[in-house]
Amino acid sequence: MQNSSHTSISSGTNHENNNNNHPPLIPQVLPHEQLYILQFGTKQYQLSGASLSYDSPSYFTNYFLNNPNTNKLIIDRSSIIFDKIYLHLQGYSIKINDDFEFIYLLTDSNYFKLNKLMRRLLTEPLHIRIGGELFKIPRDLLTENGNYPNYFTTMLEGTLLDTYNVINNKCIRPPPMTPYSCNRSSKLFNDILYGLSGNQIIIQNENHRNDLIKECKYYQFLKLEQSLIKHQILSNPFTNNEEILINYKDIKVNNLLNESNNENTSIIKYSRPFIDNNKFRDLIIQINSMNVNLMINLTLSFYNLLITGKSAIIMKKILMKITDDYIFEIVNGLEKLTILIEMGESVGLLNNLNMDKGWIDTLISVNKNEENNDNSNIFTNDNDNNSPHKIIIVKLLKSQWTINVQGRNKIWMNCLKFDGVLDKSHYNQRREFI
Image (cartoon, rainbow, N blue to C red; front, side, top):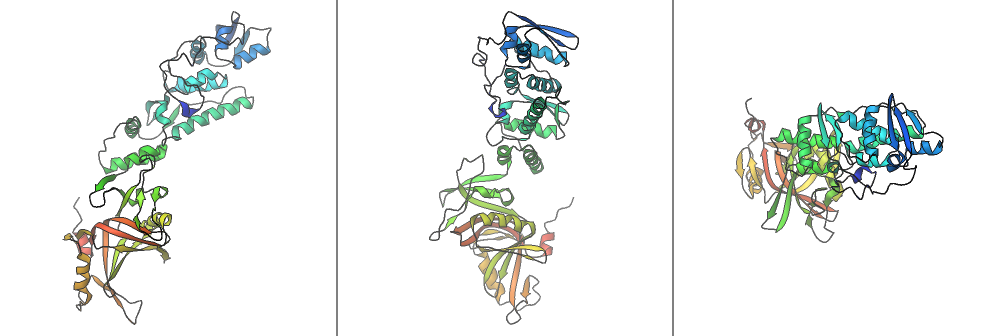
């Protein structure tokens, strides 16, 4: 039997020893030796004053105290459900068999103001059908920091509030209640329940991961969601710092840390909410997007990063948290974000060819004085007719970056690794047959 000394949903804990919760001394609310009759439908129950006083004050004790000349109370409620309440009042532990019995007991115990039984039910596993399958969710799994409050506790609190309002409004009976149900995947919820129990969920593939994360967001299991997000934690032997690699879409901006000031620079750090306990690591963001453009100005021997569309909006939210040094504009309905960058230490693939350290300087040097107009990778910027600039645009399909700052007035992103293409034909090489 499980009990708690509080009626709050968040306080459910398991107790092997119930002596503290059910002291042997029963309060003298009604005369212990007096017999009382409760009639539910056509079925009558005889209970001593001791049994009714066991869980008091209640609807029953209040009635008999206010009507001392009678020992009988007729109630138009289910005798099937009261069979369980009857056992409880006699001091027995009761077993809840299914979701219907759970919701009916929850409603009637609240309606009859049986606080001991309510406390006992609030530590019981929550009975709910998900995708047609019955689950009994241990209450302590629903109250862990980071996963509480959630879909289930909010639903349960709403049920208690509805019943409370019915009682206060002097309604004859509680409103009709149906068992809890949710039209979501039972298979995915089995995985989630396994994870909530402290186990490592086996991720079958990226679609499975994304589906699990979507379900965690629906149920508001925020801590479990964070544990499922793809990431890497590495120790950098050259900086002696721990690094966390994470997709830019998965970053929670409130957990970014700018340790720099106007006199010194630093790498932006990140701590995953509910998981890292405010331990901050050097952040490496991975951007997988078709909207990331490395703009190489051959004329000026200068380059920067231009991000457009939804990717620009996401990156802007990240940068807003840590700096004021960025350019965001909307041109003809298209969002554009321009960021200063460093590429000197970057390595990766360009048109499926390996690029080593210093590749971008070589690219600029080879193409800067190129007079061959047939080079389709070089574009001319005609915005300035007096001195048109020659520009190469590299589509960075995947890239990894650190974010470096000096106070809030200076920022640049340092590219570590990339995978990019210069033209459609090389992009087509990446296509696969189905």
